[in-house]
Length: 273
View: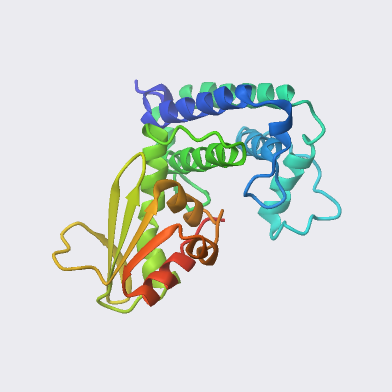
């Protein structure tokens, strides 16, 4: 009978988690304390956050909530994340890496022992009630972005291709219709193109029809706005690591066509928690 060992997303998670461990083992002592683009978190804290998420999914008891709540924490989810982070801030970096390796090994063993139908079961996730398989796709994206957080903080670019990177970028791209139509309020009939450069060339065309955004592959005319950016700028904007105004001011986005519409879209791209 098929089991979780046959689920492709489990293999992608293993690949991603192995990549994070390999990166972490390269870091020098000082690099663990470098600030990341996640407010209030250094590189060590990004690793601790991922540990906390996977231990929570295993049902491990969480640490007590911090008191007082740090000013960069904005909601209950953030407070729970912060508890895991603060409880590991004074630990040696190597110990944090080994805990990450241990908890992800437990998670893989756990998922591979499940019957295949467990991945079809609906349950809560950051994107709503979805099959567990879809939740794990979100975990791949989240972990890949946090790996990139560490790479940005330590000036160690890499792992921008492969299954985890492709899955993460595809999920981010799938949110652009919502960004264009709802968050940026693009008018009915408008077409916005995202032209990504870098390790993987990618074009994302979004058309607004009846107030809803839709990814299209058959757009024949010239888009109303074209937004050119590197792949790393795209994920940083979508995940809120850099703001639209800051990216535009730094010249990280090339805009053609309706520049006003393009600016509204860039400024609205942050959609992740």
